[in-house]
Structure formats: C-alpha cells, structure tokens
Image (cartoon, rainbow, N blue to C red):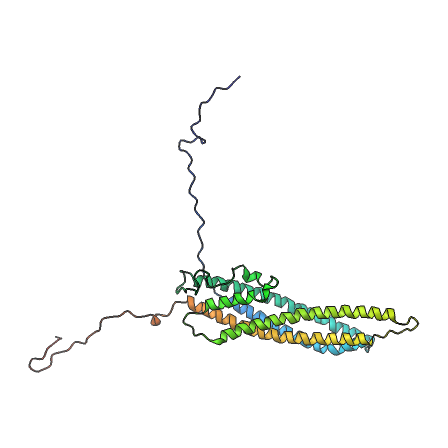
Amino acid sequence: MTQPNPGPQQGPWPYPVPYQPLPYQPPPIMPPRYRPLRKVAIVSIVLMGLTSLAAVIQSVVLWRSYDEVKRLVYGLLSEEEIDRGVESISGTGPLLNLVSYLLMGTGIAFLIWLWQARENTDFLHSPFAPRPAIPADPMRGPHRRASGWVVGAWFCPIVQFWYPFQIVQDITRASEPPEAPRSGRVRTLLYSWWATWTAFWVILVGGGLVAMIGFIVWFIRLVQVSESSDASSPYVDIYDMQDFMVRVALGVDIGFTIATVLLIVAAVAASLLMLQVTDWQHTRVTPPPIQDLPRPIEPPQYAPRYHRPGPNFPTYGP
C-alpha cells in the first residue's frame, strides 16, 4: 500500500518563520587588570633568605666533615670513627635536600611574582591605567618576548642564558615611571643579579658533573691498578687514587662555598630589584593626592576699597 504524496515542502523547518542564524559575535576581550605584588614579593624574599641560610649551614657542615672524609679515604679511622664519619657524611644529605626544596620553592614564588609583574605592565600601558604610558615602539610594545617566555625561558636550553634577563629587564623598564630620574642603581642590581645567578648555576651544575666524572675516573683507575698489580702481593698501591679523591672532595667544598656566596649576592640583588619594581608599579596605579593636583586658574580677587575723606576720591565699597 503506497502513501499519498504530501506535496512540496515549504522549507527545511516546520515553522512558519524560516530559521535565521544569529550573526557571529566574538567573545568579549577582558581588559588587563592590576594585581598588587607586595605579598608575593615578601614571600619570595623570605624564601630567598631561608635558602641562603640553609646553603651557608650546608657549606659549614661540608668543611667540618672534610677532615673525616680525608682520613676515611686514607684509611686512618677506626671502626667507631668510620661509623661516626659515615653518619656525619650521610647527615649532610637531608640538609642538601632542604636546600634543593627551598630553592625550588623560591623559584616558584619568583615566577609567580614575575608573571603578575608582566601582566601589570600590560595594564600600565593600556588605556585603562590612571596614567597610561606610551612605549618607545608602539608597534612592538614594551616587551621583546611573548608572555609565554616568562616561564618557558628558564627551562629552554641555550636561550635560558639571556631570555630571562631580557624579560626581567623589559619588566623593569616598563614599570619605571616616566618622571623617575634615570640612575645606574637599578641597572647595577639587574646585571649583578643575573651575573651571580648564572655563575651560581654554572658552578653548581659543573661542580656536580666534575665530582661525578672524578668518581668514575677514580673507580676505573682503581680497577686498572688492581688488575695490573702482582697477584702474589696482598696489597695494591692506591695512594695516587686516594690523593685524587681527597682533591675531588676539597674541590667540592670550595665550589659549594663559592656558589653559596654567589647565591647570597644574587638573593640580595633580586630582593632589592623586586622591591623597586613593586614600589614603581604601586606608585603608578595610585592616584596622586589632592594637594598635588593642578588647581584651576581663577580670576584675580581684588579687595574692596572703602571711602576715605578727601575731594574727588573714588569709592568701591559701601
């Protein structure tokens, strides 16, 4: 049985009014906003101080255990002294881990401050700022790198040696008030921080690699000496190996001490720079006090002149 033909359709939709799609409306663009930096800066500075203090304690512990390490390498310790020396050496491990954890926490707090400072500079150079600043190059803006490099520049190989410096330098320049006098203090803090911070990581990473390679070389040389020695002799001449390990231990102590001094200098320079940038941004978003605002020009006021006795004297008062 066939169905009757319903006839031609009037449209694709069974509505009396044909469907009209709404015009595309792009999502609203959120304007930049200002975030206070003082709390984040204080947390970061406190963590920098704790990290520097822990590094100093670690350096002192390494130097105090150096004599025991040397005597242990030369085999001059008794069984009790060996046990005590091993406990002293192993006791530096948790403290070294504490330095690593504090350094990681300091890095996270500093990156949070740096990200918010970058967003604040976008607000300071926008029409929403109380006193918007015009960058030197309006087509490029106040920054040479995109906002994603604020975090990625610290972990990207090769460019991590100059991209973070450029990012902090651009944020510092964009935060400086136009009426502020140009001085070399901020530039000195900026270059001092970056030079000591880079040298700290070079010594820390390079010293660790040298110590690890030295231990591997010592072990290989020990195996070669033991294989080339006389089989009938019960002793193996390893005095050269012992001297080598003592020099490696001394180099580790010296390298960690220098790295600690560089870390302290970098922490002080970074703290002063963070406080300066935070104060600049807070000043630029704070409206000036009423007494500092320019007063409107008013017509001059003349004091009334009263009648004085005398002939033909003009009067201006009652």
